[in-house]
Length: 270
Image 1 (cartoon, helix red, strand yellow):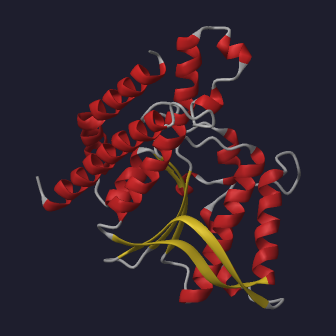
Image 2 (cartoon, helix red, strand yellow):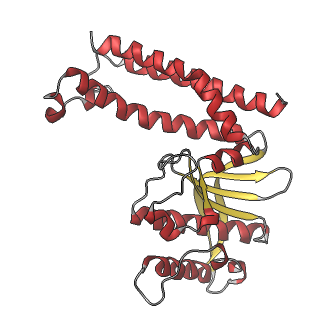
C-alpha cells in the first residue's frame, strides 16, 4: 500500500468516525427537544398512523440522507487536498458578450423542438475567451470544487450533486453557473486549454457502471462534462483506483454508523 492510498484511507476512516459520533450525539442530545431534527419531522399524521417504528425511521432516514451527503462532500474535499490546490469560489472579470453567448447556448439546449436546438458539446464554448465586447464587470461565484492540479496546472470546476437529481430549472442554472465560472477563470489566467468543467455525482443512481440516463442532466451537459460516481472519485483521488479505495475503506468502517443508528433508536423507541 503506497503513501497516497494510506492517506486516502485515513481520511475516509476519520470522516466516518467523526460522522458517526457527531450524528448520534446530536440526535440523542435532541431527544427531549420538541424542535430537534427528528422530533420536528414526526408530526406527519399520515406517517404517524402507520406506527411509531415507521414514523421514527421515516424521520431518521431523511436526516441521515442529508447529513451523509454533507459528510461525503467534505470528505472529497479533504481527499482532493492531497493532490490539488482547493478553493470554493471563482472571482474575476466577465464580459457582456460572454454572458450573452452563454445565454444563447442555454436557449439552444433548452428548446429541444426548436430549429436552433443542439446537444451540448465542450466545443460549444471553446474560444469564448475571445468574446470580450460589451464591457466587463467583476463577479464572484461560489463553487463546490475548484481544483488546480499541482503537477499539470489544469483547473477543474466541479458542481457536485450527491445523487445527481436535477430538474430542468436546476440543470440550466447549474450549467450557467459553471460556464460563467469558466469565463471568469479563463479571463483571469488568460487561457482556456487548462480549464475543465464538470457535473458530478458521488454515486450512480442507476447502478455503478451503468449509463447515466437522467434527461435533464444530459439536456445541458455533454458526456465529456459528466463525472459520475467512479469517475468523480478517481479524479478527486487522482488515482485510477480511487473509487475502489474509497468504497472499500468506507465499507470497513460503515459499522460505526450502524452502531450510531442503533444508539439513537434505543433513545427514541424505548
